[in-house]
Length: 130
Image (cartoon, rainbow, N blue to C red; front, top):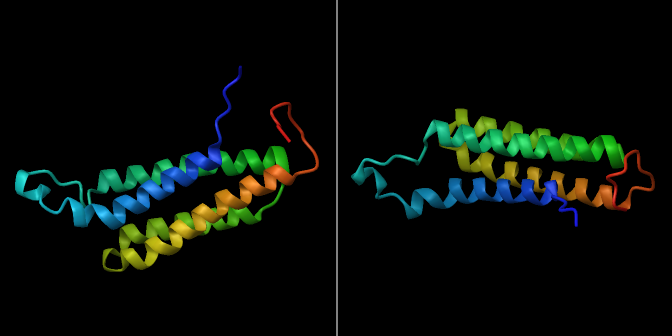
């Protein structure tokens, strides 16, 4: 039995994990600096989450675009979402205003990619399952 990984589901999960981190971590773990632990606004963790979302999403959307549906709309949504995530890093006072559209755009991109892959009428590779 061949195990097949759903990259869109993984991308949505990574994006939602990033959103939960950005929205809830400051509320739940605000006492960590008392113990010398600083993961809130940690540039390495934040950058790592953005890179993870970009790599998973980029692979998923590229695969869908090249092998299944050839639609640019999910790529456009994803790119806009990543831009909002990067802007969130530079404008900390507005980070929650950038976070909400970033999450909505990235999750929407994965959803449209997944849906487009499922309704594609042709395949170019043996890994298609529709």
